[in-house]
Image (cartoon, rainbow, N blue to C red; front, side, top):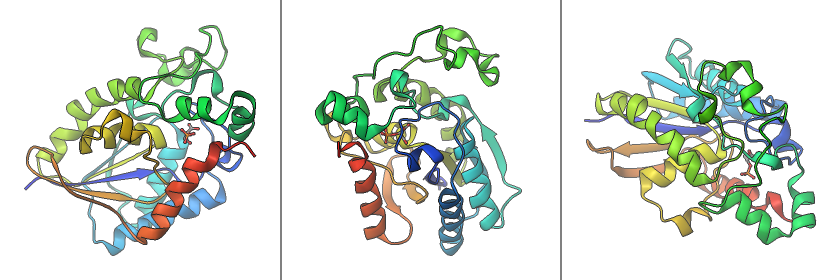
Length: 249
Ligand SMILES: O=C(O)[C@@H](CO)OP(=O)(O)O
């Protein structure tokens, strides 16, 4: 019997609150985000989940969400593995910009293409931009050629998948229960792969902050069942609110 998989998007971050494109910028959680992370831990406790391993990105909003959820779950001892391949999709030149202002300037349709199309990346961040990941010490051990200056969802999936196959899938196949705490778009990429969602359908998928999504998988890791824990209507409303972030006011 393969194990269970829980996907958890981080709680509200400072730039979720300010409605700014975030990507690889390492913003912290807000108080609300920390509360969401703890609430996620309580939902996992109610479900009686016992994790064997937890994977997360190199960005503090995901790392801290994972800590807080595991603390609330009273499983702070669970093995934790952090990896850059679980980082958020790199938002290129949009990082730091206000989503509604960007929609007012470029049009909602263009911003929807940048946010949700499968294979059209946002404008690229210049290689010499001080915010480029090649100047960030946490990525210094990597070949600079793998570090993105922008990413579409398709490019995000291309860099998440090798890590899924090498590190995460073997643990599930061994029967372990696995937590992946990551980001709106790195998780959309994974969800697209796991559920076999078509390129034109993934554009309508939005992942709410801080609500655990529980997957039951078969031996080949095909999805048997998936559901958000807690109140289904609340999860749906929260996903819609994410979709609406880039409406020009
Ligand atoms: O800003 C971002 O990095 C992401 C996730 O917060 O935003 P969006 O939902 O617009 O893709």
